[in-house]
Image (tube, rainbow, N blue to C red; front, side, top):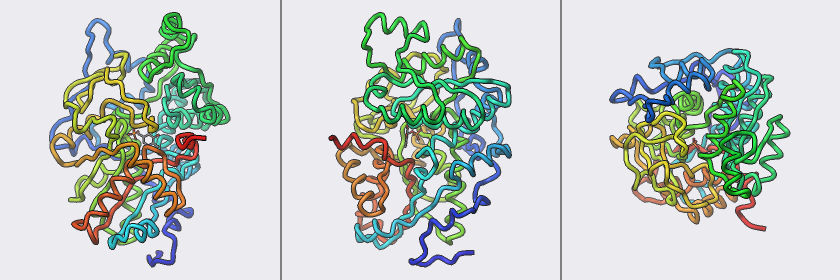
Length: 424
Ligand SMILES: Cc1ncc(COP(=O)(O)O)c(C=O)c1O
């Protein structure tokens, strides 16, 4: 076993160390302080719960509702996890510590080290695998910022199936490199609204240069799934997705144990809640402090309400009980596309609501500054979403009350395909 000292880069723990990948995903449901409120139909005549049976791979649907604490990771998925760069490194941010004059320790779990550059691949691989073993030949999904579409395109190809990605029209136009990488991975990318579905055609008839929205893209992906009898993959919010992402926290927990470190605080960013929940839930039994960072332009924690609400703007999927700004809330066009979501995963919402998880909200300027500090100290250009969590961590370390603490941060992705935010 390696003995930690300042001169050994901690990423050495990643080298061929596949034993760090856990054999089970962790599902927090049985360990929550109260039962998780189930998904709910909002239109009894047109059951959205019934719809799930027709659009999700059967095993994903089963896992969505399971109360088992541990869900075995199939061997084939373990192999794919190893292929896409798991375990991801846990790195001590020594330069950032020095820059801040912080006399504690800062570690970060680096999900940007996966081949697609973010944590999203952790949930795409099992869903594509479960679709493939059912004999499904194609999957569909939506993407806003592009990270989820990229992960879906690769996961589908790894499992020898096709993928169709409905990309919100404005992103399609603004992010040609994102589209390109999805195509390189084998995905078919269409600008949404599209003329592939009735819903898209109706939107285009109203406005031929419709900018699109995530709600419209979800509606199109689901309609396309139903029309073709294929399967739909989910990128965040739903419980099965959070369970798949538990790989992040379980690996981090093992890596910290190998180092003999005990975290005082865990910090991550929240869009729909998948990377944060996957990172912190495996630590829930300890006393560690947890801070979830949202964008202050999408102030779900300070202004949202804990209630049943629509997951998608079009109201196709069942409602969930969650902290939400309302499905009709239109977030401003901040550069951090992945944080532009009105709600947060139900289990995470419950734990924020009861005070176990603390929250922070960070604005675009602070996150941009954090992005530059992190790049100039650690060499990694973080994803705009991750930069929000870094900003929270920087503020935490600057507070003299936190001197000497051990901070562990989840850096959910890199921002190398988001550089256009810095202008020409
Ligand atoms: C890099 C990155 N981090 C964070 C998020 C936010 O999503 P979630 O809260 O589900 O992790 C996204 C979403 O697109 C993302 O791409």
